[in-house]
Amino acid sequence: RVVILDFGSQYGHLIARRVRELGVYSVVLPHHAPLAEILRHRPRGVILSGGPASVYEPGAPQCDPGLWQAGVPVLGICYGMQLMVHQLGGRVDRADHREYGPATLEVEEPGRLLAGLGPRVDVWMSHGDRVDALPPGFTVLARTAGSPYAAVEGGDGRWLGVQFHPEVAHTPRGREILANFLYRVCGCKGGWSMAEFVERAVPALRRQLAGARALCALSGGVDSAVAAALVHRAIGPRLICVFVDTGLLREGEVEEVRSIFTGLGMDLRVVDARDRFLAALDGLADPEAKRKAVGETFIRVFEEEARRLEAQVGAIPFLVQGTTYPDVIESGGGAAATIKSHHNVGGLPADLEFQLVEPLRDLFKDEVREVGRRLGLPPAIVDRQPFPGPGLAIRMIGPVTAERLQRLRACDRIVREEIRRAGLEDRLWQAFAVLTGTPTVGVMGDRRTYGEAVAVRAVTSDDGMTADWARLPYEVLDRIARRLANEVEGVNRVVYDVTSKPPATIEWE
Ligand code: XMP
Image (cartoon, rainbow, N blue to C red; front, side, top):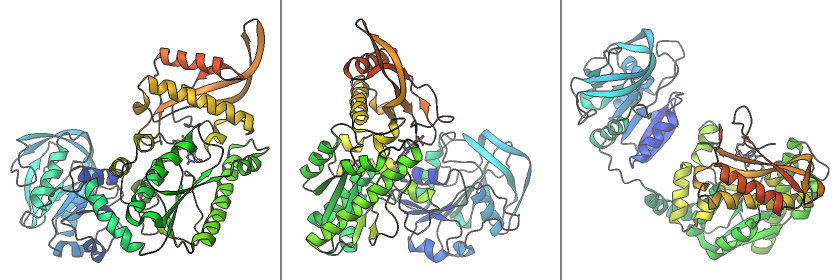
C-alpha cells in the first residue's frame, strides 16, 4: 500500500483515487503525520501531494524529516517535490511568472519513473515556485520550457519529484507515470480490488465485533445498505437492521427495502413511525424547521427502538454507520469518528452510547457500489440515486400533509418511470418532482380547474456540490407532463426547472 501525505492540495484525494485505480491501496494522511504513524501503514511508497504554500516561508507545511532515513521510496508532486528538494539541501525560489496550464515535457533520461513514455510528454503545470538547485545526488529526468527541473531523481532512484500534476486528466499519460512509480519503483503488485477488500474486511469485522451484537440504521441509500450487508457477512444474525418508515419515502420504497434485505437473510425491523413524523411536521412550512423536525423525530424513534431491542435480545454495544472516505476527508481526515449529520438520515447524535463500526471509511463511492455488488445487493440499491434524509417533506413547498404526500408520491413515481423508460437513469444524478405550492388555473374538458403546479427537476452532477440541469429530450418532458396532469389528482400544470447549481440548489428547499 501507499501513503499520501496531504499538503492541502485541491488534488489530494484525486491522487488516492488514481493510485487505487491502479490496484494499489492508498491512504491519505495529514502532512504532519509523524513517521511512526506513516510506517504503521507499512507503505511501500509515500507520495507527497501538491499544496498552496511556499516551502521557504516561515510556517510552511513540512513532513517528518525522518522520512528520508526510512528507506521508503518517495514521489513528490509539485509542492511535494519542492519540499523534498528543500529538506534535502537544494534550493527553491519564486518563479518569474506562474506556470499554469499545459506544457510539454522533454525527457532527457527516463529513469524508472518516465520509462516507456517516449521523448515528449504532455503534462499539466500549476505552480508559482520552482526548483533552482538540486540537492546533492539528484539528477534531472526531464524539463519543460518553463521548468528546468520538471522531473528529478535522487537517493539512488528512490526519491522522485515532478513539478507537474500526473494525477489530473490534463496529464493524459499521468496514469502511466504513477504506475511506473508504484510498480517499478515501489514494487507494488496492484492486486487491490473490492474482492480483496471484502476478503480482508470480513475477518477484521469478526474480530472487532467479537461475539457482540450490532445495530444498523438503514436509510434506503447505498452507503448504509452496503455497510449493513458487509457486517452481516461477518456476524450474520448478530446484526439487527432498523428501517424507519417516516412516511416521507417514495412509493414502494419500504416494501422494496424489506424484500431485498430479508431476501438476503438479514434481520430487518421496520418501524412504522408515519404518524409521528406527520405530527412533528404539522403546521411547519419553513424548510429548516421541517429538516429539524424530521431529524429530531428520527433520533427519538431510533433510540426508542434500540432500547426496545436491547430489552428483547440483550446488550447491543455496536452501531454500524455507512461513513465513506469523502465524509472522512471532508471532516478533516482526522482519526476522530465522524457521524454524518446534516446531510444524512440516520444522522445520529454523538452521545448515543454505541461504539461505532464504520467498515466503509476507506472507500470512495464507486468502490462502495462495487462492494455492494459483490455482496449480492441488487442494482435497485447499488445504483440508487441520492435521496435526501428529510425525504418528500422538503420536496413540497409549504405544509406537509398526508394528502400532499400521496400526491407527491404519485408524481415522483411517474417521473421516475418515464426517466427509466427513456433509459436516462444512469446519466442523471437525480430526477424528481416538486410540489410548488402554487395554485394555478387550468381547464379540463369544459371545466375550469384550480390545482397545483408541479415542477420537474432533473440534474447531472459528479458529487452534488455543483449541478447542471439536464437537457431532457422534449418527448420525455412531454410524456411526463401529460401523465402528471392526467393521472395525478390536483395537478393541472407542469414546469421544468432549468436552473443549475449554483445559483439554485438541487432540492427546492
Ligand atoms: P442541494 O439541494 O443542497 O442538495 O443542492 C445536494 C444533495 O444533497 C441532498 N440533500 C440532502 N440530503 N439531507 C440529506 O440527507 C438533507 O437535508 C438534504 N438536503 C439536500 C440532495 O438530494 C442532493 O443530492
